[in-house]
Length: 322
Length: 285
Image (cartoon, rainbow over all chains, first blue to last red; front, side, top):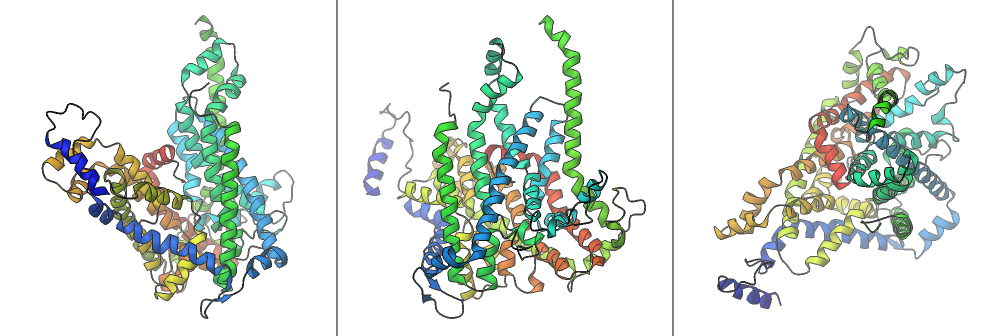
């Protein structure tokens, strides 16, 4: 069928001069390119089949088996899922930890990002320097070095407690307290508010000045302008940042791995979902169970994203309809 | 406009207040890094007792000890990291630009379906494919080589960059392609001599982010590189955690800071590109 298209589009090309109707039509033959196109696409097609689609299908299958990598997978029906939801207390710990982390770190991170972006969006001198400094932690934050440093900052004789001591507060060892350890990781996530901040800044620059002028004419003060102009105009960016951070936070791994020295401790209080998945898959070689966990994680992320998209129609303002 | 002049002192003092708040915030943001730097220059036994940032007698002993602190010197880990990150950059640049060119400029069967599939993979969590990929690479005998970390980049698995490049190529006037076509250039010639040179900004963005992500990545090396001579820098740092002992703090901090240096250099050189890349495309930093 591409053959016929080729004919029809190459015929008018011949007598281009006599046909004035080629305005939007591309004057050159763009259709007979399957061979070339698939040559260009071949790396991605191989990668997609072998490294994405194949593994997805395989992990769906493996999630219904017991598999230790060295012996053939044994069909187990829903046993992995049953175990996950009915028997495995640590799985619930991992869910609780992950959801707590996501629900605390995402809104707080975005709040900081927006607040600082608003402060920076006043045409101040030195904007570039401030933006660079605030952005830097989010560039470095995912690294092991930062996680190692974070662990020591929140240790018993770390700088946080040194600081608290100035106010006469004898802080606990944050890292080794099951009550507080997770919050140190939330703090680490918030510290990296730089990249959503940069996106907010770009969004703020897109808001037309006329809207503020009109609001000023109507007698709006700073707060009113923020609530009635800035915030609604920024909702698409807030939404974008929210979805990206949501997806990213569910997959956080390095901070909990390093800060808890690979254990998710103390008392599973920092056992991120991905950390438990890693442990089951690559320490215990329960690849079937880990595959089932991976599928549930994909389901959780897909659901959270879908809910975010469904909610968007109620609070995200697109375009200029207002 | 007469009111404006009376407002100026107020605005100016508010401006100063904003500057003070922003500088204080900037200091808090940088404090952990400054503390890390200062600690790396102190003897281990003073790190937690003498918490001031200023070091009157900086010592590089921690760097010497840290470099040779693990069973293998850190040069091994740095070389491994740079080889992997370098190959990942080359792979992403080549593979993603080829694929992006096809999507942006060529017509082919199932284009829409393939494009949609490519976009879906951007959202797909890494963990969905990690275990079967491990099994695949294990059976190929690739575990504990750099191949599982590098080959996927040559197969354009980082679909985000394909999308970034497609968007960029769409901004290049088609007249340039057509002129080359009239001169008898085929698709590959156009890709190589017309599009590729013109998409340098997108290529630089891709290279910078690929380098940062690959260099920082911990999960993939942890899974795929099992013997110490193949470790990357993040895995090398973890060795300090494994071999505990208070005396290791200084060297551990020194190597931690050193491991950040390549990222800091990239940041200083490509700061504008990084920030624009994030601002315009929403790349995660």
